[in-house]
Length: 172
Image (cartoon, rainbow, N blue to C red; front, side, top):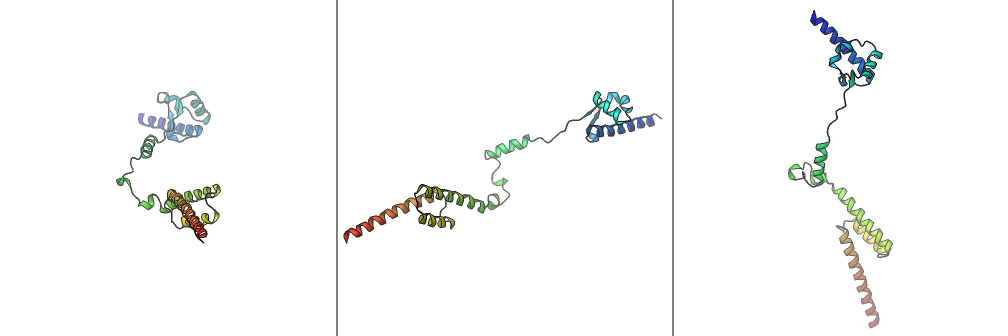
């Protein structure tokens, strides 16, 4: 007989919990009911009574528990320092990890930016700009330093040609 009463009382609390979840606006598992006030709680039959119990603090919503990001932050900090990037960690091919196309795009954009600046400064004329632009497109320059060296060498070559041409004109 005592078991039946206990079950009936628990069933009443189950319904109160469901009503409380509806009133608070959360799931049933988030509802905490004061275990010392179980008799008072079992009297809650309507939403109004349950909402009064929520106001009194007999029924409380449990706090949300999220996943901690602390370990991820620590790992990312270490990766930024170069840890966890050894051969044993690598899963993709070299191209998959940093695609050749992306490398090409970064390189050609840098070269073209430098070329535009040089043309704007007046260090190279339109014809030289166009020929160097096409060379860059063809993969002639490995990096920006090679481009600058090429331009310096071209300027020297042009000066030599001018000197030779001037000497030829004088000797005639």
